[in-house]
Image (cartoon, rainbow, N blue to C red; front, side):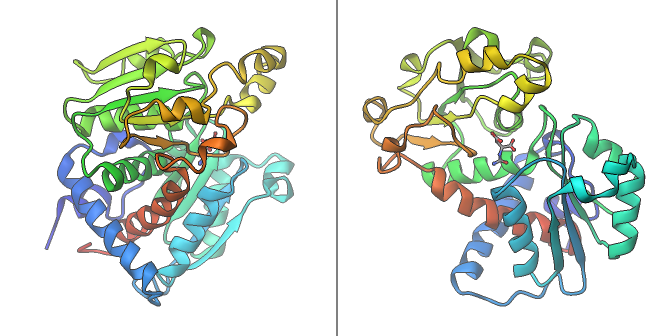
Length: 321
Ligand code: NCD
């Protein structure tokens, strides 16, 4: 039986959140993710991906994303290994991404490759050369599609909806990829949401990104968190030091890193049933005092990352998912 989930994902690359065109795909994916949650709770030994190899290749640091892909693959019975330290790889000898991707595919007998890389176009470039699906685990400053889905799943799990919400995206909107992917996904798949884009003026979403949001997306840009405290979902992000470093703007980083900070006193001013999210890792923008606040959802958010990535791997590799 063919489903929207199968049409969207089976044997397809997943490089951009824009590949998700309709709500039915998301509904079916989330149904599968909730099923995965039950399987994990039951400590079920999975085998739907038995025989498949899924190398996880990271050219940028990660704790959550790499490990959740690794355990998602293993929990479904695949062979999987995470290669984090690409300084020991042939990239250090000047090998191009297209050559590295074909090597990784062929030496592992991969069924799919999970890739994180600092270039915006990296996943698409890899997909142009690989014969197996490429799954984007974060590319440059633009895309982090599985994070956007796990964020949406978290919102769905906590709020039972992703419609009619006030959603505040806070922090480094210029360099952050999670906020861009989430804004695109939610504005297209959700109904009647209202966005607050809260950042220092220097860290606003780039104009060319805003132009890619669907017509009619309702958003207000602001330079502080206080005006966003009536939000149903407050999504904090870290100021992305590495990009400032790369662009020789470290002095500006020091000035901007703690401009928009959420304290527990501020969190207490939010609606009782609001949720606070963060893709993590955090720096100073999210005070540890918020962790015990009942609105804090960022530790659960990681759990949804595991379930969501299990569902994605299955949808890409198992027909009839
Ligand atoms: C994010 C990323 O890599 O874009 N981390 C993650 O995947 N959870 C956010 C970040 O690094 O700030």
